[in-house]
Image 1 (tube, helix red, strand yellow):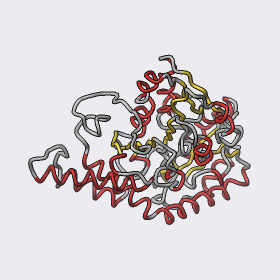
Image 2: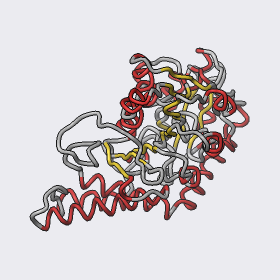
Image 3: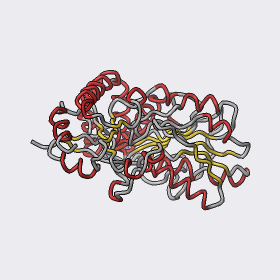
Length: 377
C-alpha cells in the first residue's frame, strides 16, 4: 500500500471534473484563441471568456479584470515588479511586506529594494499573524504597494485582510495579496473590493500546473498601472504576451467554479481530517504553529520537540507523504523562514513539518502515524 499523500499545499491532485475539461480542450477543441478566421478559434475564445467569468466570480471581479498567467509566481512578479515604473514616475518608492511571504513575493520585493525602493517589513506574532497595528505607522504618502498573503503556505494561518483593508481605506497605495493557498477556499476575505491585486495558482486548486491568474481590480475606471515584464504579441491586455493555453485556462475556470459550488462539503471533509489528526497527536504534546482556529482546515504545521523534521519525514514515508516547508525551497534544507519569522530558533524551525490534505484525500490511519512518532520520542 502506498503512503497517503499529505502534501496538497505543494500541489493538489487533478479533480476528475477538471480533468474532463482539460482533455476536451487539449484533444477536441484545440484551436488558438487568437485565430479569428474560423470556428476553432471562436470556440477557443469562448472557452477563455467563460473561464474569465468563472475565475472572476470567485472574488467578485469582472472578466476584463482577470489576467491569465503561468501561476502565482508569475502573478506575484507582475503585481510587484509591474508597478515599478509607476512608482518611479510618481516618486512613490516605498513598499510594505511581511517576512511570512512566499519567496515569490519576497524576492521581487528584494529586487526592487536593490533598485532603490525602500521596503518596510511588518513583523509577525508567535501565532504567525502579521502585526496589523504596525501597518498604520508604516504607511506613508510615498507608499506604492502593500503585499500581505491571504493564508500562509506553510502554516495555513489566515492573515487579517479585513483589518488591513480598513486601515488602507483612505490611502492610495495598492494592496496585493498572494492567494495561492486561499483562492476559492477562503471566500469572503478575497471579495473585499479594497484588494487591488490577487495572485492565484491552478495547481493549488485541483487544476493543472502551469496556469494561474492575476486579478487586477479597477478603482472606478482606473486599472492598476502595471507594466509588462516581457513583450511579444500583446495578449492579456498587453501584460502577458504569448499564445493562451486554452485547455489549462478552461480547466482553471472549471476548478474555480466547482470549488465554490462544493465549498461547504469540501471544508467539512477537511475539517474532519484535521480534527482526527489533532486528536491522535494530542497525547504526544506537539508544538503547533498557528492556532488551529486561525488556520485553514486542510493544513497542520507542527513539531515534536527533539525530533528533526527530516528524520520524521523518512520514518513516516511508508505511511504518509509530508513535507517540512515550501516545495519551492525544499531542496535547500534551510530552516523555514516562516517559522523563524514567528520567533522560533533555527533548531525549532528544523523540527517543523507540514501536513496538508484535501477533499480527495482518503482516510488516514492517524493512530499508526502517532504510534510511529511516539517510538521516536
